[in-house]
Length: 455
Length: 114
Image (cartoon, rainbow over all chains, first blue to last red; front, side):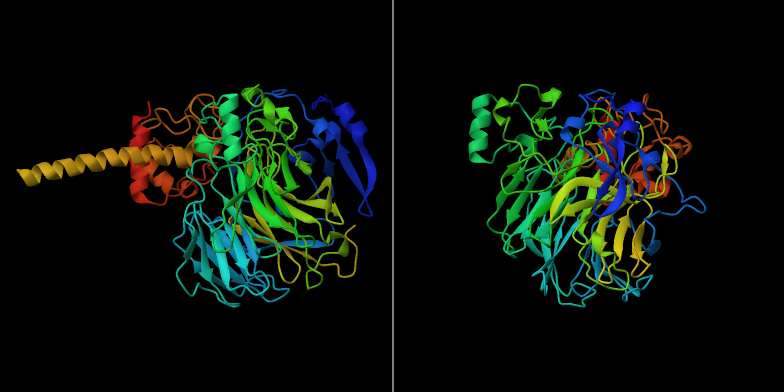
């Protein structure tokens, strides 16, 4: 088992590896576990299950970040050739999606609003900012349906899914919301975000809902027979009690009917996103707390129908949580190991695939098909980690497990941060938009060196 | 007399309902971070009403809250819960309770959490 505090070994494991055509330093083994001091655009990490330390190798830590004003001269850093600038100031912007006509929809979750931002291609700022809908209960997920020429904008609230009539160019909903799913789950405690995506064939809505607690603390224990009976009536690894219908991705028809369980034991899938290249659903998932600084990894993964990801009894495959020891031996061997393991406690929230094939701000072709993930940042770790946007490497739509720092610089010191990235989306001109609920900003990252290389 | 009794019962019912609502709001909006017994993302809130801000033992408070000079009176908690970052810029606490009645019920519930 690697010792995450051995710097000599760490240095030995940093090596030059040729990834996606560019020479990049890939940190593996214990060197892959880092904090904000080792973050910089271009740094690549690759964490595999064998790198995980034992539970409580280090004590749990509560270090929530303090929001500070952006220090004079502090700016986000992106790889060479990219420019970063504040695009818009909003009230704690969270999830973000771009409509087919290029209008940018942003959830101001705490304020209960969905806003629309409109900008000309290449523009540094939006020309219009409008309120599309308000008075919603912690709206987060946004989806356009049908995808190519939407007639509806779906919004996932804290415990409902609604849709607004929509025609391209609408800056304000033209009608009252229609309730599509009146209750996502029987309980609403704990994790609050609900995300929504439309399947590639347009027949299914996927809705993600996180757990009600860290580790199903309020869930009564069942005997082996009772657990087997519950599972037979529900899905492999389905939780019960206050966690009934939680830590899942669920599926509906676009009219709200046909409810079914798509994935279980997926503790908090904050973003559910379809890879436009192959139609595969993906999740960015926050794993459990209080097992130490470097355990367990959060993850970003392709999600297959009926897959079970282990929560609460197991993490990252058949690794049993010592706090729920011997409770579900029947589940060993039934747990899907996720694709990309992310530094524990990073809090991956937003997930978007880079799709632009051109435009005033389009990224170099090497980025096409890769995913961007916003890491909101740690609290349950002695040294701050996350607070950055990373790029997930893919080869023909298959993640390699490597991820590269793309946008860093929100952290000031071991306590203070001036922003926290949440959502990522690709604008029609090819720029990457990043919401920041800590700083109340939407950031725009554009590629400036036209025809050049990123490094 | 009958009317007065009816009114008293109505008030009583409102009060009971409000407290139950506060417990539910706590479970819904607060408990994942403010874990009973401590160790969560937020401090233990047992006995929070009436105490000076940032004084629960063993919790790593932000400088912003430590330097706020606030005492958690019901009125200050209510103000804080409208938008924590507006009252104490730099606090790590982010949850807003937008509904005034829900906030009041929550603060009433916190006052019973000893």
